[in-house]
Image (cartoon, rainbow, N blue to C red):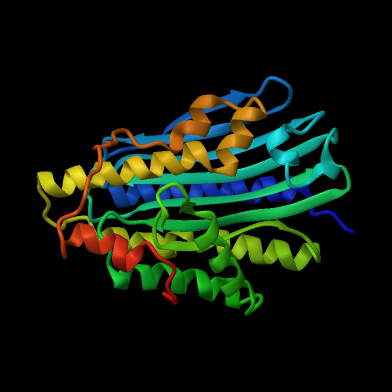
Length: 296
């Protein structure tokens, strides 16, 4: 099976990081990204960019990494035991944005390419995590992703949307992390057509998110909304540290800890047995938004 050219994928991802960072700085209007170049002992490195204390973004990270090594870590071979002991290369861009205003949702995006010996695949996706749910926002996010998928294969969106709903579930809370999006992994086959799809859907990120951020960023809020935002960020932390495959892979493969954990919010909260007031916006987040729905 023909392999995609890693150097072409790397160039696309570096350009994607540049385009996203420039657009986010322009949207924020106040803060700028700090950039760190780093090297991984054993092979590879990356370019981490973090923004903080902005008008729109309280904290955000857009990270490029390319790591390689002689042997895969256990987290990467648990579902593909035939790859144990294989030399590997993994290249990707990951992004998490924690907005200042509680009415602007957290967003996560990750697009990556992986190869080990003769085996390769594309992976990635994007998902939206609101503290306060708006059907208009969820529809916009999902429709943008669906349009990008439909340009390549009408089966992609329903398949990857269901995969996202299942993956981004906080199992010990019995709730989804947010309103989902798309998620896929181990995607291989015709290299040219899959790479075209992967680049198209990765390139749709700004269109999917920035209109939502602009729509909500000036919504008035008080201490109640801020405290609920911090509680929901706590749930975000729980998922990333317990279930997220990318986080586990990065830590177990000897990646740069600061870059891997850039996804965590600057502040979060946990309150024992917290219950939302009945029929409140906080209660409706769980009943109306944190279960799978056909948003598109």
